[in-house]
Length: 240
Ligand SMILES: C[S@@+](CC[C@H](N)C(=O)[O-])C[C@H]1O[C@@H](n2cnc3c(N)ncnc32)[C@H](O)[C@@H]1O
Image 1 (cartoon, rainbow, N blue to C red):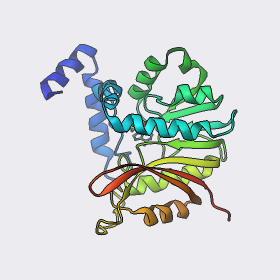
Image 2: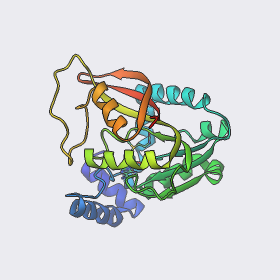
Image 3: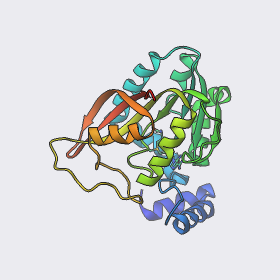
Image 4: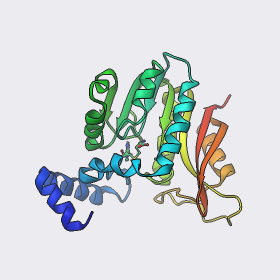
């Protein structure tokens, strides 16, 4: 959508000032600790699903994760962060999971509410920051984290998120990550304020997860790009 188109849409929806305020707040705080990927507001949130539904990869990823979920025990407690538009909720509930979701964007959660209708009342959802999860230690059997760690937050924040995941998980972590292809030359390690992006290969990602007490049990490669592939990592808790 063009800049003018976006302005008109904000004008129509009355979201212009809220979005500007949020952008200014983020710009002012991004230097050190504000979550850098916290930008899913206004039309970006509203258009999220329509755009993703057109992408073949979205459906491939959905199918694979739904398959993994179907193998988890019924009655499990699951935290989905970032929750986004709640794309797995129907499947969670079909598997009789106890579902909690957290996302930084109230607007994404509004879209989730609209999309899910009645189902939204069967889950617990809140606005929050993945680097500081508002749950006691070992609250959930499983944590699901899709499209986040390698390209939404920076490296320092990704580490904080992993630390939080380890603290609140009792069993396994299902993660979607970008993984550098071994056939590509190594690149510079991410600096704290940079996103991981395509910089880390399989061993480096395993080391990173290992640092926070996760052991990679399985990697499902879904799609290969020039320098990286998108993959789902199934991680258990490393024995101490
Ligand atoms: C690419 S979307 C992924 C959403 C969902 N997991 C999916 O697969 O569609 C990234 C999400 O991260 C959320 N987000 C960004 N920074 C965050 C943070 N620090 N804590 C929690 N959520 C955050 C955004 O609001 C957005 O909903």
